[in-house]
Length: 158
Image 1 (cartoon, rainbow, N blue to C red):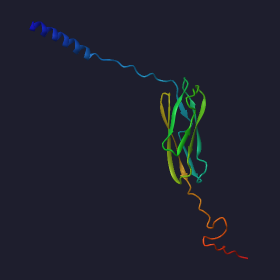
Image 2: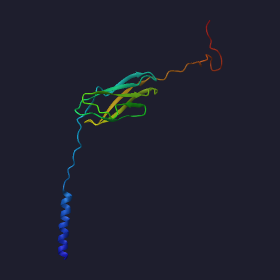
Image 3: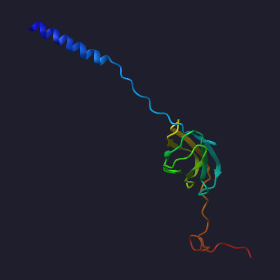
Image 4: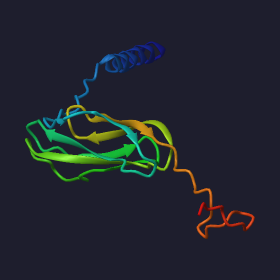
């Protein structure tokens, strides 16, 4: 009896071992034939006036063979806001735009990115804006009533 249990156990163990050694193949994720191609991926504003126009439209085209769908576009910080065609199929050969707006009420140099996620062969692309915002304008030396802080009227030559 011990001998038959030992043989049965050995056969059972061998079966489990053989099944455990079987290699499982995983299916590769399907590749898309959509492709997003930007005219340019970096825009340099140069110097922008404080509170000036910090908006640029990145032009792109679906250069693939299937509809392109942009699922997300997000800026690297809250001062950079992208606007894009949301979950709308962009046909092969069709041209669209991603508008990026930077808050120009922040003086100094900046480099900000927007990550665009889509169903393209390359599912994630990064576009960049950069430039320098001039310092804020200096306040007038006199209040709007024309008087100095101490109430005196400024000297005028007659």
